[in-house]
Each structure stands twice: as structure tokens, then as C-alpha cells.
Length: 341
Image (cartoon, rainbow, N blue to C red; front, side):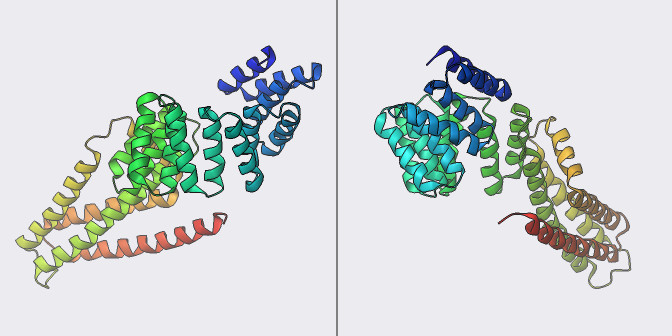
């Protein structure tokens, strides 16, 4: 690799993409035939998600250095990002054919296979990359991502954990492991992991959105508890909800106890650092903020039941929950309409 190419690669590693591109183009102005600099420029533009520009640089590099596996590796990923899967697969296969024992060639091929939807082949190639470079975090991360797409959650969880063992500050692995925790109905672990990922890399755009998803999940669970709680209070009142009674007080206190225990079990292991991020996620999602306030009102109504023993107060919880159901349906439809197909 030329000195100019090395400087571009170093700047790209530091995420100084504008400086890296400027350095590459200055070097190419002096020597337009430098295939190494063209390849590094293509990699920089890939990192910047300027895939069409990157492909132009990669095509030029491939014409100059057809035996360089990295040219084909980078070109394959660029083609895959542009949706040109057949060409991407050919480029990825060319890379592993030229360098069958190069782990990053295998990683590139696994990436294009994954993007093309050939997940079984992608996992097989990702396993080969892990075999070639067992101490390389990127190999385990690619295996984890592919396994997650295949719904092989055991392999995915194990590979994410190994990525974090090798690279404890890998924000992508921490984030994706937290998403697995959310899917596995472990909201406390998911929330903690998402906050840690955000602290590792504050530029991650999905962190607040996924924290909000965790809070929505917790809100749904609390809603179920409150609905059941209304039945408990009504049954304790024996059909006369207007007259104070001890059984109704006990029913209200029981519901509050269940809410308190469930909240403690979910939040007991969360560090204090999760609070600012969680509050920020809630504030950024107005329907979620409204839902949280409404649920707090519901818990307060059960507190009133426990104090007064008047069961009819619990019926107001149903009214609030019915309003929240309408809000949830409207928000779900609106967000589905905004999501591109």
C-alpha cells in the first residue's frame, strides 16, 4: 500500500471521512493510476454511504488491479448496497477466490450474501471468517448479525457476547444484543444495553428509538396488570362499588403491590445512568409521554381505591386505558403509514 493510501486508511479508521476523501483525491490528482488510493477512496465513500460514487472508484481500481482481493471485496459491498446483488455476489466470490485464507475477504462475501438474502450461505461464510480470525471482533459481529437475521438466537447471542469480550466498547454489538433482549421479553436488560450502547457511540441514531420501544413494551405490560387489577377490585367489592369496604382496600393495595414488585424486578439492576437516556427517549415520543402520564394516573387511582375502599374509582382506570388503546391504534397506523415499504 502506498503512503497516500495508508494516510487515507488511517483517516477513515478515525472516522475523519471528509479529510480522508480530500487526501485521496489530492493523491489521485498527482497519480490517477494509483489503484491502492482508489480502493481506499471507495472504502471511504462506502463508510460515508455514498455508494454510487464509491462504486465508480472501485470500478476504476478493479480495472487497474484485478488481482487485488480487497478491490473486489469493497466493490462487492458497494454493489450490494446499491441492490445489484448478482454483480455483488460475483465480486464477493472473486475476493475469496483470490484470497481463500483472508478473513476480511470472507467477511465481505458474508456481507453481500446476507444483503442478498442468502442467509444460510452467509452464516457458513461468516463461520469461516471466525475460523480464520477467532480474535477478530468484526468476524464474530458479522456472524451474530447473520444468525440474528436467521432467527438463530442462540448463535447470535453467543457471537454478540464474544464480540463484546474481544471489544468491550463495540457499540453495534451492545446495541444489537439489547435488541435481542427486547425480543426475548427482557426489557430491563434491553434498556440497560441500549443505554450502554448510546454511551459507547452517541451518534447511533437507533438508540433513543429502541429505548422508546422498550418503554412501550413496559407500558403494555403495566396496562395488562391494571386491567386485571380492575377485575380484582370489582370482585372484592361484591358488586357494590360505591360503599367503602375493607376487601376493596385490600384489592387496591394488592394491585399496587404487584405494580411495585414488577417495577422493582425490571428496574433493580439498572444503573442511574439509564434515567437521562430513558427520559430523553420518552420526551422525544409525545404519544409515549402521554401514555406514561396516563398510566401514572391509573396507578394513582388504585392508590385512591386502597385509601378510600371505594371500588367505583377503579372503573375510571378502564376509561383511561380505553383512551390509551385508541391512542395506541392511531399512533400505530400513523407510524406504519410513514414507514417505507
